[in-house]
Image 1 (cartoon, rainbow, N blue to C red):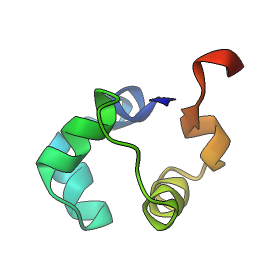
Image 2 (image 1 turned 180 degrees about the horizontal axis):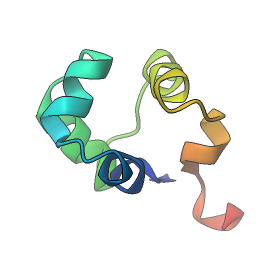
Image 3 (image 1 turned 45 degrees about the horizontal axis):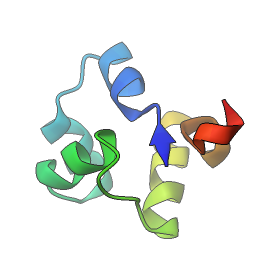
Length: 66
């Protein structure tokens, strides 16, 4: 699954650690999600959605979708 986390984070001048603190995970987890090596749980996806004020589908998507 692909995602826009890196772009959304960069738009806010946040580090991976800043984003990790905001959603209560490790920086390594953010790194793995951004690189597509780890798919977040649904509760974590909802945290990202609330944090960025976007629908989950606007943050995470299949290669087929875009």
